[in-house]
Image 1 (tube, rainbow, N blue to C red):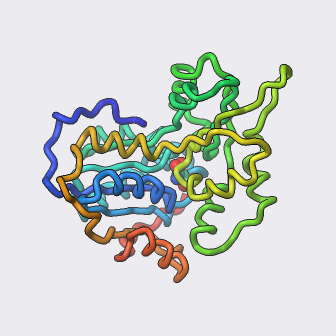
Image 2 (image 1 turned 90 degrees about the vertical axis):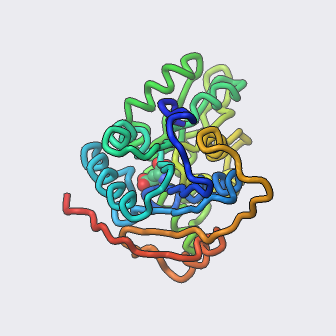
Length: 286
Ligand code: DGL
């Protein structure tokens, strides 16, 4: 995770902190779930920039400008104590600009290379992410720093985030299409060593985890960074008050709302997002 520049002493939070979890679309729900379990007494806003989804296809300058514009609106509307950028594609690029522009603390989600390097026995790791994340120099620097002794296969998936959104909205994706997206992650080298760890470096992918496990050509350890992000949130804002319940409804905010079909609203409600608003911010023509 990218949060090292923050320290718990650096800011004060209210006793019932408002935590805003942000993603391009619905992937950040995997992070929201983990953070809510860790701080059930927080107030939560889940914000999805569905007007600009998928971020994996945006150029770097366009993505920086977009996230700054959306965040400006979200911070003014919701005044959170803390923001989690639950998107690898954005975090690997935009965190410095966000921290420079806004005083609110940000925690990012970046590819879980360090735990992957600690977990592998074969030395063969695959990083499954959006095309944007696999291209970032941030990602390449993480690999050089933490996985120098491993063979890391970078797999930029053009479709998997969209497939995860479709599944959540009740449109099943067939096995062959999912298997084709993950196939390049499974590598066997000349000595017969096989990939044994796959980093889920896009927050959408854990939504599909049971399907990915079932379709894998051999068993691997799939690393989802969400629990580590929840621990980081607790480090910064402290644990829940004693006897805290998972109270309030999560407020959902979407920049277009076109994804909000009835089945998707039902899936969101099942995840605690009972109240949804379209806080429109159209994507300007590129
Ligand atoms: N959920 C996002 C991530 O973690 C990205 C999906 C997309 O917008 O391309 O990278």
